[in-house]
Image 1 (tube, rainbow over the protein chains, first blue to last red):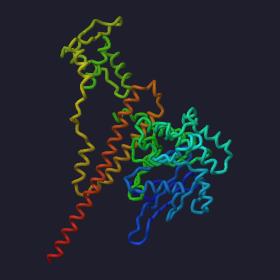
Image 2 (spheres, each protein chain N blue to C red; image 1 turned 45 degrees about the horizontal axis):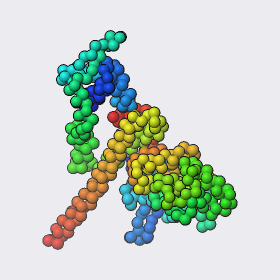
Image 3 (tube, chains in turn brown, red; image 1 turned 135 degrees about the horizontal axis):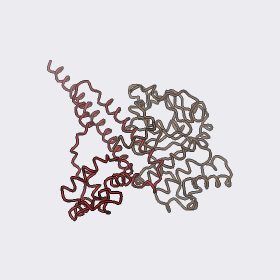
Image 4 (cartoon, one colour; image 1 turned 60 degrees about the vertical axis):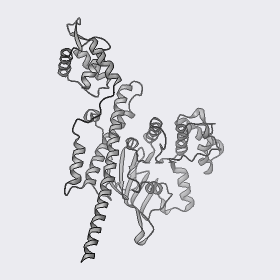
Length: 250
Length: 189
């Protein structure tokens, strides 16, 4: 069961996100902290992978590395076949803007901007014309069922609606990699479930999703669940079709 | 117990015969708990003996019909208004296994917890997939049952996390204890 380096090794080049034998060490010498130890993980198009583990197991480090917000000490992180370590700062920023969508627990919506403006902002930052950015933002908001609220400000929306705006912002444009860190935050269980349904639907439509959560019920939406402990992958479960699931667990 | 109360609740809606009760029960609980027709007739016999159910003629096809007595109706309304007793009478194999493992020499409790965690997670994934593919209106009763199983699996996973952190803390405390004891021996030498 415990083969920390081998469990999820899948060869490179096949996934939207590939981590190959990734190690992240904070500090050096005797006080060095190994946040990740030789983690390999591939997330393909159409796949939602959940990462679970106790606090301090390396979940957030994994997500930060996948999004190019942090650098690996050893090993390789690739998004859409681009080795993030080989990119210049400007190239890396472009990958983050164009290919990666983030959904965080604190939504980071800008209160002075409407839903549509919040969603179109990353596109405009990336040089899209206001007209194209706005059209794509409307499409993304329509996809999360908020077309009628495009001109609302975040403060005039419910928590669930705000979270859907944050998801629309993560999905806008051609992003194929979605990184979600406890995306249901403080939402109640029904609204939280809607968020997971949206992520699931987006992955079913071809995106690659990496979800970090401590909620088993949310991880249940994933195709695979990877368990981290002390910075290493200790196990993972694959979804297998067995129609008898209900009968055998009753 | 649930079959007995379930049949009474269905009969509260009108007289029915055995096979119809079996079908109704399965439909209304989303097919999660298939009944054996023999079980249904045995239960009806006991309910009749206990004065909660009485014979009410037969269908055109000759199936014996059952109806609730006044006592039976009282029993149904008591059931719907009272909580289900929560003392766990049945033996919980997993709890027994972990309790024994924690004190048994040579058992890797963290590995045991992880094996169980993966299994429970796999079940949770399957249940979630069933739910994801269901029709939220047409399958409403069945979805409630699925949700129940999902929350059960989640509770088990949370409990496993709790067990693991407890085991880790215990191991750390023992280690500290041992090194403190070793320190004492050194100083007295």
